[in-house]
Image 1 (cartoon, rainbow, N blue to C red):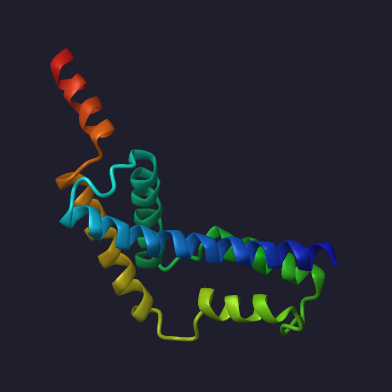
Image 2: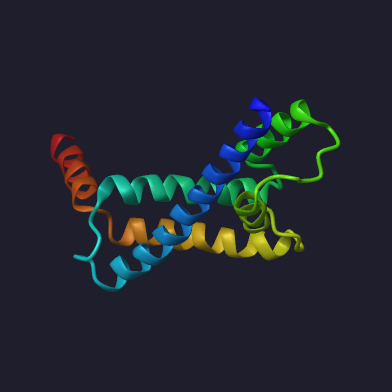
Amino acid sequence: MVYKILADIIVITHFLVILFIFLGFFLTLKSFLNPKFLDRWLFRTLHLFGIVYIGLLAVLRQYCPLTIMENTLRARYNPELTYPGSFIVYYIEKLVYPDINPVMIIIPTATLAVFTLVVFIIRPPKRIKRLLSLKYEIE
């Protein structure tokens, strides 16, 4: 039973990561249009690394580590588990693991990663800008 609960927690965590990536995209778009809107360097840096990592996984056709952990835990609980879990987790799983052609996920994910990287380069957070300017002043 512990393995099933841990697998459900991972699905919820996975869903929250996906929400963070999508929310981050819209906030990045807003900050591109209005540079003063979002200058949270930690948020933008984590979002940049997250979307680039997810984009690389998608392009390389690799599974997310969260997916691997969840599948491992479910297999330990019951290898033939079809999904008798809770209502909420069942529908969150449908959002996290949609039954569509992988290209429909790879192209938007790669596009989001490139856009996020370009915006981060064009309009870096102030703190990152300051760090880069200090580096050039020292050299």
